[in-house]
Image 1 (spheres, one colour):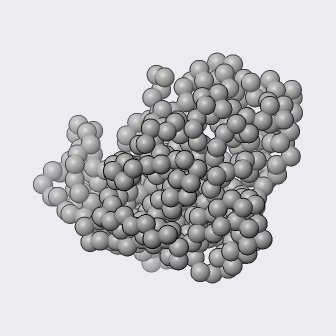
Image 2 (spheres, rainbow, N blue to C red):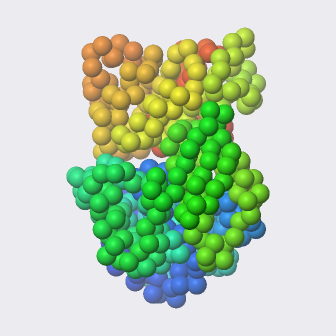
Image 3 (spheres, rainbow, N blue to C red):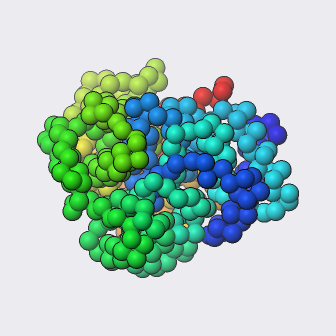
Length: 449
């Protein structure tokens, strides 16, 4: 297959419903000589923060010269975003060649979209002989397609309500699914809160004899007013005045989880110098997750402007915040960041949501912050309509809302409503964030490769 043919073939697999279970994945890997057996892994599960932890570990290990594979999901605009080795995304020819191997090996058997991309990641990483691969869980953990590996360290960032239709309707049930990645005697690093989820994860680790390292107990983080932070790791290792570029108080926890995992990996020979850690932490970025930038509307150039100060004067300046928050815990992190990390006169919000999400819960959490709420619908059959979302607002907030027929229309409305002292927040759905980011900033992956 050529690249476009391979991408089209993969897209057709989206018509198969989500299927949790490892049987088909195990059968496929049997047919391609188990590429995962030749690789070392970090396995990352959790409700929120998986991508941030994963990309931080990529930066840390890459800074020390290791060849590091990274598999994440979903992507914002190009499927190739899911597959990286250090700073390089998978090339079009590599994608097509690996996809062809998978298609031919299936011999007509059905496979899901996520099983296909997971298989592609394993085959590519094995062919490239990476030193270590970071795999982000797609959904849950226990029956997720990535759970065919035995990692050097497992990570569970946190547990909150999301994907209830697939994972369960209680925190304990969801935690049990995520704790399904815990392997016998493999260390676990977690940021779970002191609730039912902690009980479940702790008990699972005890049953599996897996050493358990908990944020706030075994390793700690403390923030400074200037945005730097201190880390106290397992065994008392201290690192002070570390940098952090990513916005949001929750990112300090994510960074600490990554450092705790790195401390454990040193026992397996993955060593990063203190200078390397400091340098790597200053480079970590994760597109579409509390991603802040300013654009000059007349030249469409990115302008340097701080998040915590108003810069009146340039009437063409527009300030943007893109965030893929789509569940209650993610929206809570977004609203906290709006309160602590940004200064603005008015908040103009462009919003979309998938119809199978907790639309009322997330929408009514963000709506009181918005001076104007612009609903739109990305090109996805799962997207809720603007009318349905508006109907969920209290009467007092409905007057602040309007609709944009397309994402481009909604962004145009927002830019027209906002001034240089306002903040345009695009949130509620990663599909929306991906579409908006492409319009505003272009593609993440170089299309010429």
